[in-house]
Length: 275
Ligand code: SAM
Image (cartoon, rainbow, N blue to C red; front, side, top):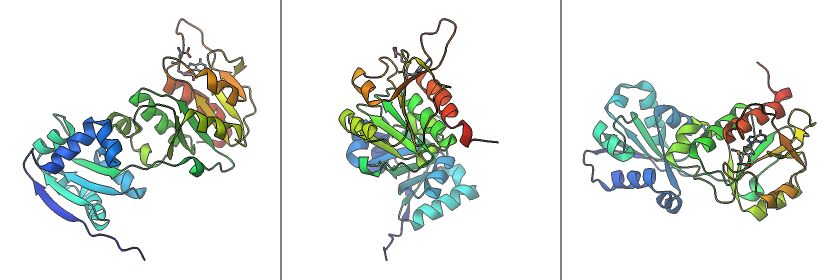
């Protein structure tokens, strides 16, 4: 039987406390997040999502408002029982941790979770989204949230991507980060995966000749999306069976990446979704 560590409660009043400095570093520096394998998520909803989904919490910082909030107290009790350190802090200390004037009443520090290539499972009726060098944290967070909404299996980050554990990305996921598996693959590892993929591998492309509403998408679908500025890397095109395009009228060159992902996902998942 695994022995679980019992957490503790600590009061912090000083902005220069080492834990406050550590959390500040996690908020502002990707290097710090990668080295420690930790990240910060702000807000009670995200804390509840993380705990419900079984993510490991290292610290849960509670501001004064959280002390009379039953949901926050329940989250703190669960986190403490699972070994987290509960920090009771002032609003000013919460603001210093998150570099915000109006911080949320709860700030959590969690262990990152990423799947390795061999953990990308392809159960029958599902869709994975692969993002080629996604740069914008808001786009990535919105895509993770949309994959969650359509019941997708997960998101694969291909090549040099923005950090999925950056505060802006986590915020844009609205909690879906804790429910959508993520994997990071090199371009070559992705090509290997796409070549062996048992269902349809469809890439959205501005030069695609196939209307995205016409293919008979075979589950599991792998939907591949290009970079915001450069589109899909040429080298990845041969790994995709079909290049689909979303029709446009008007003067816009293209759709925003997250919007294009949402439009394509809802078509791919049409027969699986109902009110
Ligand atoms: N300048 C880039 C290009 O030439 O591809 C624009 C990239 S667009 C902002 C980002 C990604 O969104 C594209 O690589 C593609 O995956 C998807 N996308 C945007 N609009 C699309 C459309 N109308 N049809 C298919 N894919 C689209």
